[in-house]
Image 1 (cartoon, rainbow, N blue to C red):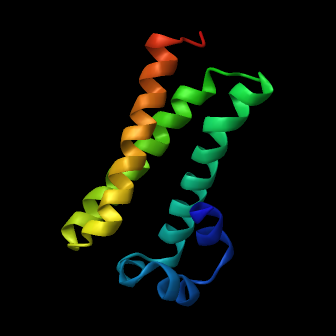
Image 2 (tube, rainbow, N blue to C red):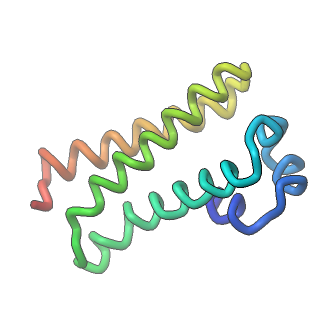
Length: 108
């Protein structure tokens, strides 16, 4: 949902909803973040749900996890601990999915 919002809304509207960190990045970078989040979320769900290339699920988890790790670092640098906590939880979730789909319940 947040990824789609970053793609669909202009930067000034995002600042109102998401905070001052939006000013720290350019509009193209903001759209790239939105695209990565959007594709990562769909990549976690659709391949397994539709049984079409389920191997993409753990790779989507890795990509989304990297996105969350970078977001976590940025929020910590800006001392936005509440937002960093959300990114940490999402990062842990993506690690759980990636490890689970590569080792515990492999899709290969």
